[in-house]
Image 1 (cartoon, rainbow, N blue to C red):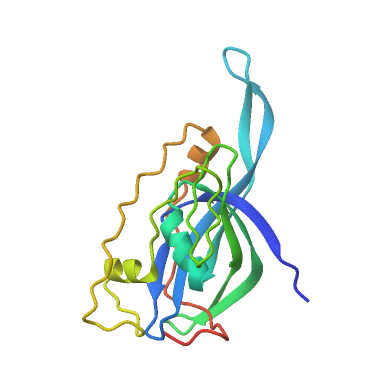
Image 2 (cartoon, rainbow, N blue to C red):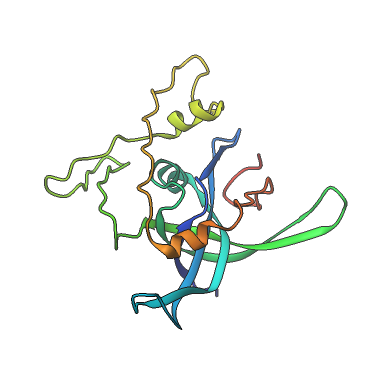
Length: 202
């Protein structure tokens, strides 16, 4: 039996959302994670110099309502915590070579709150926004479908989609750890979605 893993890091790019003809929703993003270690060096004013170690870059898959919520909530550079299963995706490329990579199929995704505060909006009938914290504007699967030019099959094509809510730019990071992570190249989201037993093929 496979145990879930928990990984924290920063998004290397904005999440990418795909809505299949079956109505299933998939969102992918790439997470960069590393340890900060103190080196033997110091700055001119005597402060210790820190460096990244054991860097890990891994793709994360989210399905269903979690996929919608991640696309609506997370952006490049934001810190996130992911809980899910580590799996190996395999496919055959255009040259006939069998390829594989590891990824996380997420069960839970959250904004890491060491340096952030967040509001919330419940996506079910029961509200859970605490106290006087203002709710965010809810983004739905139909909003996302309108933006990426796709129409879910359970919605009539003549039905207008809701006006999408503008997404603010994420706050700039002055932390040297994130700057080091962001120096890596953009994520390779790929076009090969692994088979999902509860989700139809694209």
